[in-house]
Length: 188
Ligand code: GRF
Image (tube, rainbow, N blue to C red):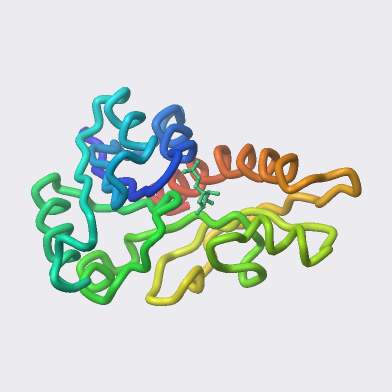
């Protein structure tokens, strides 16, 4: 039986993209990378795995709706059923949310609802809390606000720097995202 097809949306380094690609027994096939930053490292990673890429600049579109209409056309052409955001730095708008209702998920490096936004790791570190973590959640129109699917906590140690904390958080992300994807698609 052929696997359902999925796309990863990413803007940066792509370590989570790579973790998904390396995950064993994933019940979906990643057939498309969508990237809004030409030159991002994740594009090289997609090439390495022979995954097709759609790389765009938001400024080439007259509006977010126009941009998302093009994304939907690319996604439909590739028969995509699921979208996994992995360091994608744009909010998803109503056009794409309606087309892929309950089928877009995101990973965020904090225990949401604490520390949403662009610097979840740094914000938790500076807040002086004793633990932070990783959250996988459904995407809605807000910034890191959708219903939570799974979370794992990561302690913040007295000797931590932002870098050592980030390294431990990313290691958790790379395990948790494939696990969440597996559970979601198999509806566990
Ligand atoms: C990860 O920390 C993810 O949680 C956040 O953006 C970062 C992406 O890192 N949304 P990478 O590009 O996957 O290495």
